[in-house]
Image (cartoon, rainbow, N blue to C red):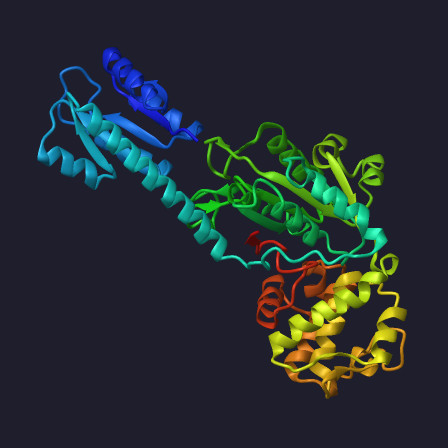
Length: 468
């Protein structure tokens, strides 16, 4: 990707000479002739570097105009590198420019090779800095699992697997539908893993978990001072997913106002952080998911038809676990191996009665319920095999776990999961039922390693990301 350079000088011949030199070196350039034009350009566009003259008023050699502009540019974007130029270069002027935020300086007349080398070095450093900033933002949020294996051998899942392999490498937006717990995020991660974007990040977020006042900040980011608690710049979901994939779960639950804002980004590929007039270009594939019927929501006026067309270029419908019964045993053994290792238990398999119980159960909570049941059984098992009584499946004798039979931590884990299941994964509803604040429930979920989606943390305001 060629770097975009903003050139600022009040002399037309200087601008033309620099434009030709940089174009020949493969850079894209924009030329302006005044400090105000520099500010407007940086506010509205993305640049990799500014090549800035320090003087604009005729017969002025102090550099004060440029020094003031350096301060303004740093406030607009502290990661944007600025290389200063002046025909009246001095050690004092160069030191002052660097003190005010310049990354380097060039004397007029310049040496072409040194100028190009300086620009390329600063562009590379700035890109590395911005990448590090995105990674740091990701690391402050809950991370999901790395691309989980999509376990499916049933006939009902064959069309799903075929569609994933066919459209995975494309950039087509995908809508994944299915009941709660069917593995919609697993499909999203698989799509990302087989795409041309796999070397970049997959950002997973529960879009339906945002309040009206939080949506824009979380999805598009904000700048320092945009609102009372905005103590610094924050990168939004779309920017984090730049080059990669953005997974928007519970898409049916976003408001019409939020839908309009999302539609604009999908149509233009442009975002603006809250509190900023600067337009940023983002390139992210969008995979969305819901357990609701969006066609019915469109008919009732609760969902925009034009947004639906943007989201469901391809639609993948996941069958419930009761319709893919051949996969139950395979999935159960997979979860057994994972959780036995995680809890340090030596458990080698299931008894015949346990296998029969797994096969007979209807699994209303689908794969998520199966995973939770196996994890609980690993904790309760007394021998080297899981027994039917360890599973404590609903609809059987011993329907629910007796809290006196488990540790305090496991009892808390069970209660949190039951609350999440009753409220279909909605953290706000579960927190209210448990008598907790939303943030307090998130802290418990993090400590207890309880996920609020199909395969890992991802419900906002905490965002899971992974590199597939």
